[in-house]
Length: 289
Length: 289
Image 1: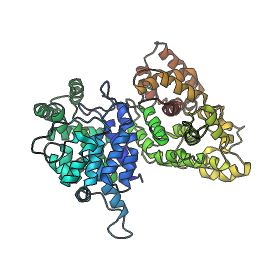
Image 2: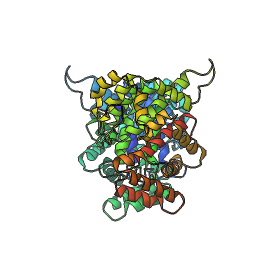
Image 3: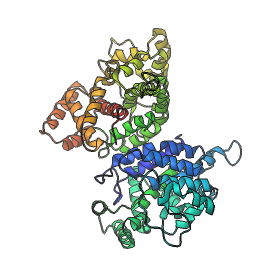
Image 4: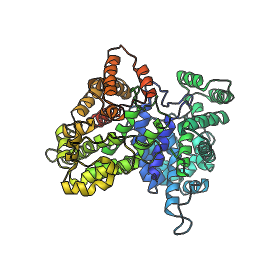
């Protein structure tokens, strides 16, 4: 049986191995300065932090360690979002393996409720760890909307005093940006899309990377990718959603779409992160590779 | 700085990410039942054993653990040879980091001499660990030649009594098959080709996976691949060497060669293993990804 840290690392690596995922780096598509090898090195470097999470956390510290390790490659931000989504799931999976329903029972299978419990128990220190992770790597973010309580993430570790003063937990921080960030929405919304993606990957047939590529296209056609909104604008994100749906209907070629999106620098990273999270859940629930 | 275990795991993953490597699984070529995803899962599963090696071994036990972990995927043997080559190098690198020349000095850089010292110090228990690894996965091997002292590897853990009785160390076992196995030749020949490949990968420019693909083709054109001899015969291995040299000279297309070799099931695995070993040495000596 694969360890929880193995499954988390494998999830990151299988995500980037799944092709075509229009606009994202995958094993057949890359940007000149952000390449497949950077994602492989990022997935390797994240290992120690993922192990920390598999030992039960704390969530914020494990996340920061994983991001620091991920950043030991020259491509920049490869898997910040994927690690953010996977970390509470890893902690939840660890609790399920350690604390069966009754003594002698098999491990509890990872559920949305278990993951949401981990989120609900996050602390101010976890929030500080999350902000500190922004010190390690440049992450594309917009100016925060006016009505946001939480400090600007670009402050990094300098946000600690404000977080302490406002007594903001990592759950509070995520709740604050759930409307504008698809990953924060998962954190505070029971990881609904993540578990749905896991279900779809597990239910299909064939090589797991092919299954994930088709699930990616579906997910991209179903919801706006918030990273495209950040990188470009809402109109571009709507176009991406519409054209992914068209590719699903057979009205566009996914391969042509992949080439075009890479050319235009359109990189639906949030949807890719959901695939990584979905892979982790699927692997924990028995997906065979 | 990446840990030694990180570098070892990254070496396995970068090897299979390097394309085209005619006849081998890489990120653009796979067999129906032996796919890229199996190598990714193999590289993840090997982690715990590689960590054992990075803690100083013992070599045989670390190797067996890595192979057992590598085998937790459904593709079969993915990186048995690569792990065999990398394990003593990892142990040697760990000693170099732990024991600088004088106290306060930087870590000693990994050298062929340090790796050969690890080989020279292997024990009968290491040999038993090596044989035990064959219990975990089907490895293609020929009937042993008549003049071989060491037990048939296909005995797996059942070879232990004979190894003990003959007092064969893992170095003895490798010396015994150095003539027919390119990896055993590395073990007892100062890892000459491995370090040369590391030097070449480091000396070139561009994405590291592109550099490794071109170094692979050179290595394939320079020496017979002993895995092709095992899988097919010496004549096929000579053809592979000749055609790789022709591809290097521009007389054949590496991409066409890759497609043809995959079609014919010609899989120059030993040369791929040398690339993994070379990647590890290069990473330990400062190769940036």
